Length: 403
Ligand code: CTP
Image (cartoon, rainbow, N blue to C red; front, top):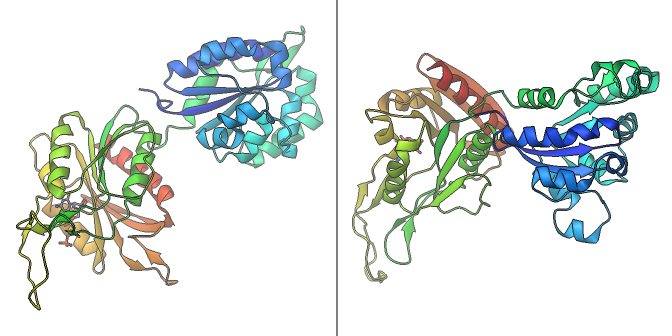
C-alpha cells in the first residue's frame, strides 16, 4: 500500500499550459490511494475545464471564494482543514508571487493561508520567466517558509524554448508527494487501538470509572490513520468527536472491551492499548438502584481481565504496545510492566503536574512520554498529545519493521 493511502490532497490548478496534465495527475493520485479535491484559479480554467477535473476527481471542483453555495458546502476553511497536503500543480509564476505575498483574494490563496497542511508547488512556466530574478527570489522565499518545490524539469517547452521551467510529469509528482509522507509509515498495516476509560456498573445508576479523557488514544488513532494504517478504535465512553477514516466500536465495560478486541485480533498487525481499563469491577451488579440505609457500605470488587496481557500472551500475537500512567518510579514500573506483560513496547507517563505546575497526563492536552522496549528506550518531551502521538507512531513503525 502506498504512503498516499487515506491522504487528502487539495490540488490547486493555476494558469499554465501544463494544466492539461492535471487530469492525469488527479487520476494517478487517486490510484495511489489519495482523495483529491481540486481548486481551479481563473487562469487554470482558461486551460482545462472544471468538468474534466470533476470527472476524474469524482468531486465537485472548487473555484470561487465568495460563492454562497460553495461556502455553504465545503467552504475555504473546511477545505483548508480537510487537507493533509496542498499541492499546486501547475504553479504559474504569478501563483508563486501571490503565495509570497500571502494574498487571500481568491479561493486557492485563502486555502493556502488557512491550512496547516504541508504546501507543495510544481512550477510550470517559460524558461525565461523561471530564470527571472523575481521568480527566483520568490522561490527562495517560499523554500525558506518550508514550502516544498517540486521541480521544475528541463527540456523543450510548449512555446518552443528549451530550458528549465517544465512541470514535472504526473508520475514524478506522485512520487514527490509520497516522499512527504513516508516517515514512520504504517502503510498497509492494520492497527487495533483501545482508548478512554471503562465503566463498571454498580447498579443501573452508578458505576466505577476513572479520569481518562481518551485524548491520547484518539490522538494515536488519528496518527496511525495519517501514517497509512487501517485503524479500528475500541472506545470507552468519551466526549471526543469520532476521528474520520477509521472504524470505531463503542464499549462500556472492561469485559466488553476484551470481547471487542478478541473478536478483531485476527485482522491486526499492531495492538495499541491506550485505554484506562478498570482493574476491578463490582462482583455483583444490582438490578435495581441501591438504596442507602446503613452508615457505611462496602462493595466487593473482583479483577477484570487484562486486555493487553491477554493479547500479548497469544501464540500468534500482534506487535503489542502498552501504556503506563505512574505517579512515581516511572522507569522501573514501566520496564516491570514491559517484562511482566511480555510487550513489544510501553509508553509511560507521569500523572500529575510538570515542572511549571501545569497538569500532565490525564485530563490534559499535553503529555510527555518515556518509551521503553527490550534493550532500548527514548524520551519524548512534553508536547501536545497529537504531536506526541505522531512521534510515538513513528517509533512504533520503526520497531515493528525492525522486528
Ligand atoms: N490494561 C488492559 N486491561 C486491563 C488493565 C490494563 O489492557 N484490565 C492495559 C492498559 O490499557 C495499559 C496497561 O495495561 O496499556 C496498563 O498497565 P497496568 O499494569 O494495568 O497499569 P495500571 O492499571 O496503572 O497498573 P497498576 O495499578 O498496577 O500500576
